[in-house]
Picture 1 (cartoon, rainbow, N blue to C red):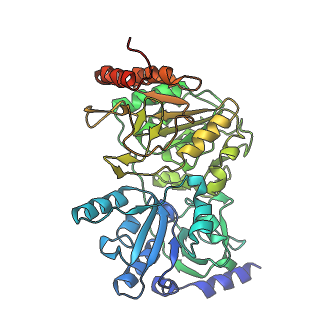
Picture 2: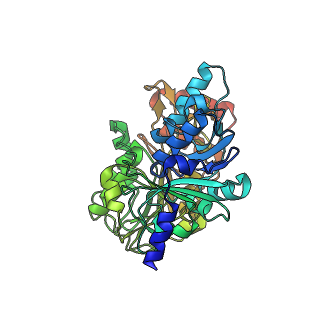
Picture 3: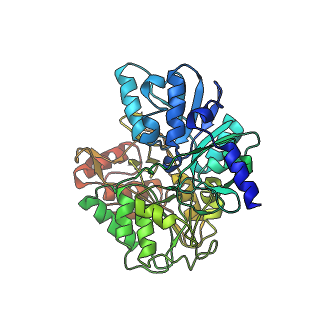
Length: 444
C-alpha cells in the first residue's frame, strides 16, 4: 500500500508553472491563513496573470502574509486576481492605502465569523480551487495541513475541488483532523521554503498592566483561548505560576507554546480532548513550528469545529481573551475599523465570546488600552465609529489598565458608569456628559 501511495505521489508532481496552468480564468481560489499560503504556487500564478494567460480570478483568504502580498496581491494585478478578504492584515491595509492614493475604492471584504468561513466558501461562494502548503506525505499517504487547517480542510473535502498543494519539509506535521489524502490531490509542487514568522509584538507598560489584571482573572485548571498581539502575549507572561491550564484556541501562538513547555499547560482538566492542545491555525516563530511538529499532545482541527461555540462550551471554565479597538458605553465593541477603514476583521472573537460564556464557569474577556493616538483619543466612546463586532448583549468582562468590569447583569446606566470608570481620567467627564445627554442616567 505504501508503494501505491508513492506511485500516486510521483504521478502528481509538477513544476509550479505546470500546476497553476491547471487553474482556468474565472476560478475561485481559496488559500489558507499565513503559513499555509504556498509561495512557489502563488509566484507562478502571479507570473501567469502578468503574462495575460489567466484573468478574473477571485482569491479568498484570511490574514494574508508577505508571501501573497509580493505575488498574487501585487497592486498591478488587482483586476486579474481580485482579493476577497475575510480578515485584513498589513498587506491589505497597504493595498487600501495605495487604492486611496489613486482614488480607487478600498479592497473588498466578506464579513463573516471565523467559524462560518468554511460554509461561506463551500456553500455560498462556491470556491473550486485550493492552493496550500502542506507537510511531506506520511506512511498512510496523507498530507498534514500543519499550521493552517482553518477553512482549508472544508474546501479540500468539497467534491470536485481542484487541489494544488505545495509540499514543504518546513511545514510541521500536525496530528488531528487536518489530513488530505494523496488520492484526492490534483497536483503537487515540491518547495522547502521557510515559513512566515510573526515576531513578538513589542509590549508596553500598559500591555503588561492589562496582562497582569487578566492573569489575575484566570484560575488554575481554566481552559484558554488567546487572540493575537501584545495584549495576549502579556497575559501569557503573567500566567507563569498557574498550573493544570488547558488550551482550546483558534490561533496557536509562541506565547501559548511557552506555557506548555513551562508546565503551566497540561490540558488535564478539560472535558473534551483531555491531554491535548487544540488549535486551528498557528503563527509565530520557528520554535513554535518545531514544537508543533509530530507532537502527540497537539492537534489541529477545522475552524468550524474549533470555533463552534457549542464545542467551545463543552470545556468547563473556558476563558477567552481578545482585544478590541473601541467600546461604547453599552459595552458594544468595534474590533475591526480604524479611522473609517477596515483594519482587520471579526475573526473568531464572537465565536469565543459566546462559547466561553456558554461554558460552565466560563468567562469571556475583551481588553483594550484606555486611549489611542498617544493618549489623544479615548477607546471608550459614546458611539462606535465602526461596525459592531461584539454586541452589547454578548459582552461579559471588559479590561483596561484602569481595572476590569463584569457587564453581565448590569443595566444601561450601570454599564455606562462601569465603562467610564475604565476610561482614562482625562476623558471621564466628557463621557459622563455624553451618557447624561443620551439619557442613560441623571447627572451626579
